[in-house]
Length: 168
Image (tube, rainbow, N blue to C red):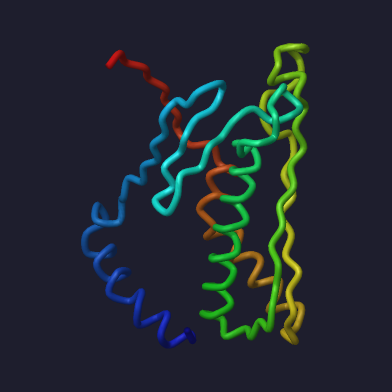
């Protein structure tokens, strides 16, 4: 897809959202069911993913770690966003990789140390790009990727959160 095709694809959506801002608000959902042992089967829309305890918290390593899944979601979103931005900016990319790594202190997760944070204390996102684009263009590409990556921005600006439980 080139920049013209991308603009043509998105133009009617952008017009619709300008005319009717409520049309731009979409509720995404995820579902899972509690599985045998300490695991949760997550419906991904394409397959069934089984998440369990990370080995650092007593897991076998046979199931997916939700922390890894969070980083994978960041990599996926950032990669798609970067490709869309590169297309719009007409920056040719011959190839590229996206990687994310995050530091967790499992003392917090296991309740060993109440001062240790539960969750990632740092996440690093990196791109290795095969391109001849000048550095100014790459800087602009990274700025747009950071700005428009949904997962990155969600992590960067805490959304309103709510937790509920009901019988049934």
